[in-house]
Image 1 (cartoon, rainbow, N blue to C red):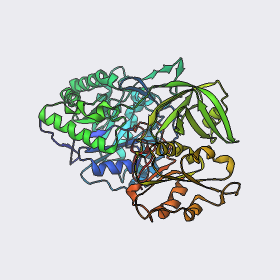
Image 2 (cartoon, rainbow, N blue to C red):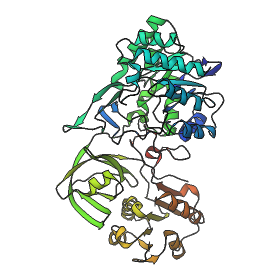
Image 3 (cartoon, rainbow, N blue to C red):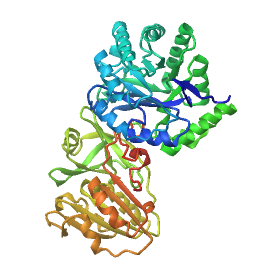
Length: 542
């Protein structure tokens, strides 16, 4: 079958989108994929509410079966004013349809969001279906009168198409769709996640929200049933179908049921931008040639590890009052540059560089409630690990390697130094911190190569910053690779110095962008270039 573009309010666009709240949640990432992926005709934003919202604490995502997930992000968003500011400078191709998702508790809140985003949106999607945000989403969508008043209020202030996103948990989704269309909606999005549902490990609820919406392979029948029921009652209306779409056959089944636009979400787990482009290209080819090549792509066969492994604290090393090394009793294979999530039921989880993998050792700087909780563990206490994540680094090279670590970023280069030394790669190591107590494993580092140290208080090495150390190293004019790990300000300071010896493709930096899922789905770690650092990095070229 030849893939035909669909018309939405006069725009002819390709019939694929990435579901709201998946991957393209930062404007930088949305813009990047809008420009680079021709198959994405509809660009759906994350749901934006009337006020900034931080969402739920991690974990926000758990895998209950292969390809099946529960999630409770909590409608994280910067608020409409900040989001509008970000959209105002975004370069979205004119051939794309920008569908801005909105949520709120009442008509006034929805109208406020729509009015602020109106100058930048081609249309709106009203989220009346999120199953895990108290007072929003499904809580609103289940109230027929409230839903009708919201839709009528929104369509009265915009002439742009309005889609209403409905939940499969409604007792009669076809009746809800009919009510939405009679209230002035242009079309329907079906479905949102199923639930809320519960998932646990060793009796502990994984999500800090305790319950979340089900997505992925387990909800295909829910999505197909919803779209079919709506079409059976209303005939062919504009429907964005979603829920477990992964293959060409899934797209066909949604098309048979009545959808004309197709939303893809959880199937993109772990994919880099290049892999998403490859996946969508093969998906379209499968539809046109009646094949199933997408199922055999290596990117579909690889799957990031989401299971939790219980580990025990073997030793807590007090490097400094606010920085500790946690050495476990577990071997845990990780490649240089990768990271893991540490989870303590209750306090939550956070990502950490793998400082060493034999045994698994983490360096933890106390910054908030979770890092306080993990730093308070004692010998014999247990916690959980999932991963590893991120791209591994190839350190087996004749090039001279210069490793630059600042502050807690020092933990991120230890395994690189160790692996490079084992492969007989020449290594120089530049370490900087506020004082000697914040430079872990200093004697161990010296086993791997030449080490230079800078401390702000002069308690070890040169008094000053890591940039002050560059004047003390001898490097060839070519054949040098740099690996940087530390705060953004440090990275920005060392890059001009490193570019005197190496091209950008030989400079790798890991900046402290906070990832919340680790597998590329939540999009929270996208940098200013739109790269999701958890799958594209964490060590990336400038």
